[in-house]
Image 1 (cartoon, rainbow, N blue to C red):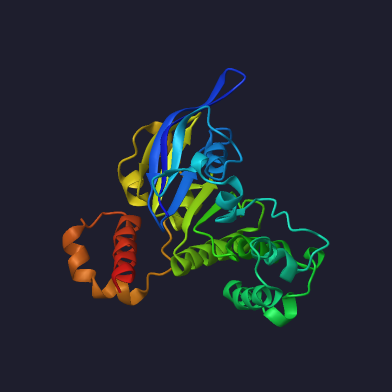
Image 2 (tube, helix red, strand yellow):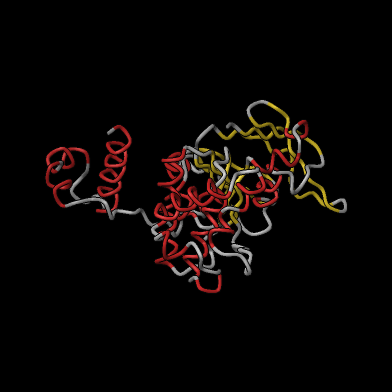
Length: 287
C-alpha cells in the first residue's frame, strides 16, 4: 500500500509541530523517519492510523483519504510496534499475538495455527512459548512477540516507533536483521521511527530527515550519505559506521586489479570497503 502525505501541518496551542510536510511512501518499501527528539517523527507516524489528526492537509493510502475510511477498519489493517512493547501481562503469548486476529473474527484454531506458524520466524519454538506469560520473557523475546502481534493479522502497513531503543546492542542488531528480513518476505509497507542513523541505514529503502516539524530531505540511504541537503542532515552521518561484516577476503582479492585502477594508492581503506559493500548489496539484490 502506498502512503501519501500532502501539505500536513499540526499545531498545538498555537505552536507549530509540523509545517507543510509532503512526501510519498511506496508500496512494500521500508521507510524510515529520522530526526532528533521532538522533531515530529512520531507525530507523523501516528497520523497514519489516526491516533493524531493533522491540523490541515491530507493523508492518503492507495490514493484514498484516510478520513474517508472507517476508523476501526483502518486500524485493523495497520500493525503497530511500540518501544514499550505493551504486552498484556495476564495474557499468554498465544493470546497476545492472536489479539488482532481475534478482533477480526478469526476462529480459535485459525489463530493458534497462525501463531504456531509465526513464532519460528522470530527464532522462538512454538511449543515452548505459546503458553508463556510476558513475565517469563526476556526483553528481546518480548519485543519479538510485539512484532508478531503487529503482523499476525496480515496487515498491509506496519508502524514501528523506536521499537529497539531500549534493548542491548546485540539484541538490537538481531532484531534489526529480523525485521528487515520479515519485511522483505511479507512485503509489508513499513514506516519506522528512529534517531539512530546507523539503524536507519541498516533498514531503510528510503529515509526522511525531519527537524523541528520540517521535512529537510528524503532519499535512499546512499543519496543522503553522498549528498546531504545541509549541515544538519550531514551531522547524522558524523558517527555513522558502514557495515562491512558481509565482505569476505575473497571479495577483496577478486576485485584487486579493478580496485587498484579505481583508487589511488593513498585512498582510505574505508572508501575501498564501501565500494565493495555497495557492490555486494547490489549483487544480492539482483540475485
